[in-house]
Image 1: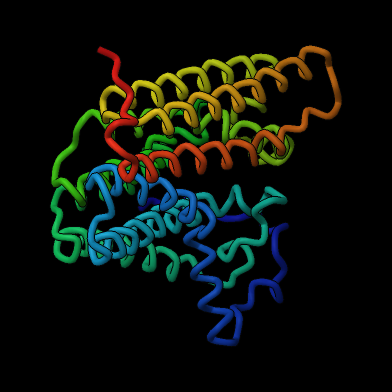
Image 2 (image 1 turned 45 degrees about the vertical axis):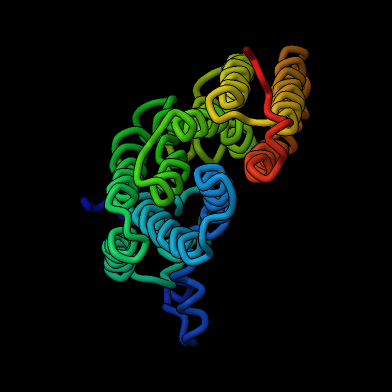
Amino acid sequence: MSSAPSAPSSGASVSERTPPRSAMARVKAYVALTKPRIIELLLVTTIPTMVLAADGFPSWTLLLSTLVGGALSAGSANTFNCYLDRDIDAVMKRTKGRPLVTGAVSEREALAFGWVLAVVSTLWFWFVVDSPLAALLSVAAILGYVVGYTMLLKRRTSQNIVWGGMAGCMPVLIGWAAVTQSISWAPILLFGVIFFWTPPHYWPLSMKFKRDYADAEVPMLPVVAPTRRVAMEMIAYSVAMVVCTLLLVPVADMTWVYTVVAAAAGVWFTLGCIRLYQRAQRGEAKLREMRLFHDSITYLTVVFAAVMVDPFLPDAWTVSLF
C-alpha cells in the first residue's frame, strides 16, 4: 500500500507516542486497529444471511469458521484504512486517539498486521471454510474498502461513502457463498439493502462531526452540501432500501412475519429521515442526527433478525403473490 501523508507534528506529543509497555496494552492497540464495533455490525448481517441460505441453521463449524474469516477480513481492511488515513485521524477529534496517531502501534507494525490479516483471512476462507468463492469475495471486499474507498474516493468526492460503502455489503455475499458455493438474487437483494442503507446511516454521523471532516479536508456530503439536500438524498436511499427488503419476499419465499417487520421498520426509519429533512427545512439548530444514526443500526438489526427467523416459520405463512 502506498503511504499517506505523515501526521501533523502538532498532533500527539513525544510522550504520547511512546509505545505502551504492557503486553495487554499492545494487544488492545492492535485490536483497536481492526475497529471491532464495525466488525460487529458486519457480522450481524452475515449470520441471518447464512441461515436464509441454508433454510435453517448451517452447521456450527461452518457458521463459526465463516464469522472468524469475516472478522479477519474486515480487520485487515480496517487496519489498512487506519494506516492510510493516519494523517486525517490526527486532525479529527473523533479519531485522534487511534493507535497510529498516539504511537501505540508503529506504521510498519500496522502495515504488516494488515497484510497478515489479509493473507490469513483469504487462506482461511479457501481451506477452512472450504469456499474459494467466499475467499475471492473477501479479497474483493478488502480491495474495495482499501483501494476503492480509502485511496480513491474518500478524499475526492462527496459520494465517497455511497460507492465506498459497497465493501460493507460484501459480508452477505460471502456468507451466502460459504453455504451454497454460489450467488443468487436473494443475497444480491440483501446486498442492495445494505448498499442503500449506508448513506442514511453514515451521513447523520458526518453531520455531527461536520467540522472534523472539514478540518481534515474530507468532502463528505454534509460538509459540502446544504443539510436539506443531504436529508432529501437520505430519504431517497431509504425508500430504495425498503424496496429491496420487500423484493426479497417473492424472491426468497419469505413469510408474512418478515414482510410485516420489513415494511413497518422501513416506514419507521424513512419517517425519521423525513423528520430530519423537516427540521433542516425549518432551520432548527438541533437536528437530532445522532438519534437517526442509532436508529439506523436498530433498523438493520431488526430487519436481519426477521431474515434469520423466517426460515423456521411454517410454510403456510409464506406470502403468495400469485
